Image (cartoon, rainbow, N blue to C red; front, side, top):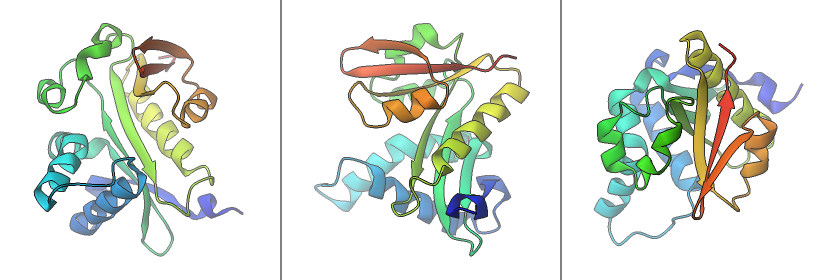
Length: 180
């Protein structure tokens, strides 16, 4: 049995201590982002709000948490099942509309992060597959993500079935059909 086998996936909305879960999400977010310096606490909070705030406020049911046996949150996925309809999210996230022409075929998108020390145990893949299954059950035709062209996560997503690709500048759109 690996460390990943002892993890349960729960919706944020099902966890008894939402505040603790969101604190863990914030900790994992900042341990995973490439941006490490901020001019102030307010700037740091605004950066977190840009990338997670809409999901917490508007799509909390589509946030999946990886929870260890001891209750520690070790990973999360924030999801949006209607990229075209998420007008406020498009206002917050830079370059959101860059791939809007692909939203009909791949309406859902997500962001996933795993706590350092828990990576390489299949948790990210489990979170992605759980969200994809949830989207498939809702009848969605596909799910997508956007990453940097040369990011180290590209191979991970390709192994996870994200084979439809479109590059625009330094950004790479990767889509996975859900065979509804």
